[in-house]
Length: 360
Image (cartoon, rainbow, N blue to C red; front, side, top):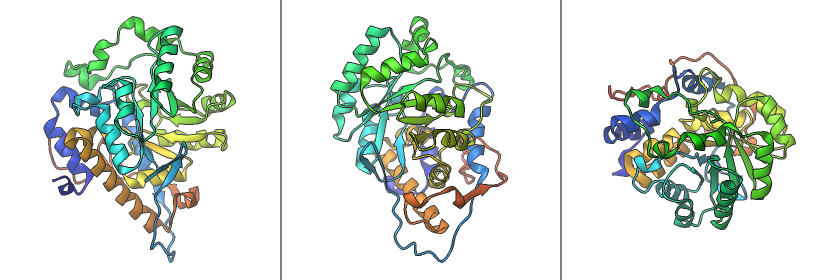
């Protein structure tokens, strides 16, 4: 049955059939006018390939490395809060899919089950994403649990100083489970984060450190000066600040500012294998998959997420072969250029054959 899904748009359509309206709105929506969300997609659509021909592409290797681990494709699962809404197994379902396919999972601190149970679910090394919801004692306890559970890196999310106005779920009167548990006093800790707070968390964790939510060259430069190992270019999938630039719009200036002193992860609008190739060409080392992960889990659980990754891999292999590339380390900016977009952007504009009227 899982093999019956031949494109990821079919997985999305199945996810829509299975999701209640509120959960669907939470997954697909952005903040306010959803301008940032659409710009995430448009930023990819403004990039065209410059393919080279008469290159032997009989063998195309899509693999890369992150944190000493081989990734089958240059992608990881992004942290998603309340994953249990889309699959009863929650983060465990995502972790199992990541392990089966051969990528890594960044586990959200705002999902179930507990971080220890998710860590124990598979032997694959995992990254933990932290929202600071307490004082120094609370944070120290979280770091202890993260280290004791064997997570190999820590990602601190820093673009959520205020919870945004996400109007699609607001109109559905829907709040995800973890949002219902997050009180105003807890959110004060997110609003009070500073570079000094980050330094303290980074030092105490003693793990490879990722700063998630970087959107400017200026902040990327400061982060590198503070010894951040991984710059995570992200606008929260268009779910936080509205009227921001798309992640791919900001990537070139961030990559230039970083200058190879840290590695770069990018999320926001990644929907196809060709998107992965574009991101690598403009300076990312890997991409992180958010909505695609949620859609595929909602459609068919862990097996659906594996199938989604297989389709992405096939798309990436095709894009690389037709561009004249045989391995990820050969991808450079000379294989892409600016172009005018031809499709109006929205959260599913990659799939022009989408025919189900309930999707949008």
